[in-house]
Amino acid sequence: MISTPVIWAVRSSVRCWRQRAVFKGALEVVSVSGRRRFSAPTRRGASDMEELLARVVVPLPSYETRDKSPPPPESISLEFMHYYRSLEKEDKIDILTKLSQDYSVDHKAVSELSVRLLDTQLRDMATILQVEDRLRYSLTPRYKQLLSHISRVEGGVKFLVDLRADVLEMVAPKASESPHIKELNSTLKSLLSEWFSVGLLRLERITWQSPCEILQKISQYEAVHPIRNWTDLKRRVGPYRRCYAFTHAAMPGEPLVVLHVALTEDISDNIQSIVREFATLDSEEDVNKINAAIFYSISSTQAGLQGVELGNYLIKRVVRELQSEFPHMAQFSSLSPIPGFSSWLQGLLSQYRKEGWGSDLLSEQEWKEVEQATDSAPGTPAVDSLRKLIVTSEWTRSERLSSVLEPVLMRLCAWYLYGEKRRGYALNPVANFHLQNGATMWRLNWRADTSPRGVANSCGIMVNYRYFLNETSKNSTIYLQNKVITASEQVLGFVSQFQKNSKL
Image (cartoon, rainbow, N blue to C red):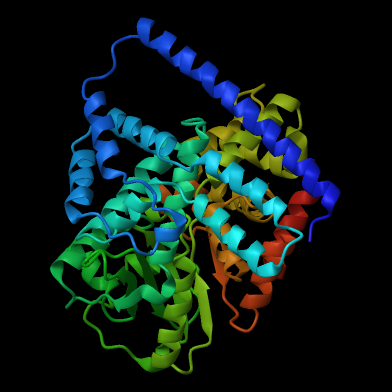
């Protein structure tokens, strides 16, 4: 129960807020009417947009009739979908902005019910619960009904997934400061999280016998290691390989998140042996050679499902599938790229150059080796030479440079993964994903991805995140709650070496 003095204090502040809101609203009416006289002509179709929204966004039923109001005809949802798809990007922004602002929560009703809830605090619990339920219902945005009705027509769920992708573009950093758009995004995310809960998803194994449409989409959606041709695709779903996807009944033929797995004898330390190995194309699987499952690519295919947890559940489901197929299998690990490492390193070198800390990043002997290996011109700072090597990837063409830079880049990469944080969690998004799932940051692998893309993104380094199944729950908890990363001795050793040299 809330004490009587607190009730009166809050009630007074709410009433004061309501009076100010009414006064502010009156000023806004005057201001808007004034602006209309002098503003530039509105974009063509604005009146059509307003008429459409007034027609398709039906009023929220009263609390008493909320379960008795018949749904609007499907034609209304289809009309909105057709109209929205016909719009250009700027017009889509306009209609989403207007939808989120003019058809949101009835703030006046919420204010009145808040005061009423305070008045009931000294009454019986049944009365309090009923008022709380009314207040909860009043907090429903009016446009939520339209979204719910759209989800029930054919193609409606896919439409809303794509609609949220548009909203996410609007709420990207500095793209929109509108709290209404952010609330629309939150509402859409909440609805999609319910509709795409793991219990409603279907796990499918993709094979060469899968429908051609699915195989083509698997190829198109592969974002980590691009599939070059049909032969490459056939190998990735063939012997010693597994490909799994989550699908949803409301989006038939559309893989939502895709996981590629390599079945190996040991935990792989390079991607070349997985994605470029043609020997496995027509071979028969030897169960005795399958001791480990390597998750080497996981791709979300729908931008509108960002933030809806799917990938972590897919890995857990696939582990169960593989354990059922190979009961003796005990090693589960990713072989993950490290996007952003090279960019971070270039920025770090620029910072050290600017602040004169270059001598602390590498040992004196290592700086001498870099100068000698690069044949730097007299007077050229070694840190500039090193930065140029990273930007151009020239070092990969010299065995001497590669051997000089290996210990340097490995400890820098270890620090990037382990020590660089955003709000206390790993800065690198791939690391954050696997650590949230309870994996251990297990092993850094030198020259693990020698493709131009791999060298440009992460200096060719890859990392294994090891899934020790009896420890994943504990690891996930201490990472999410205490922001502690579980790492192997190898990784921690590289981190310790970095800390001895740097001022970070």
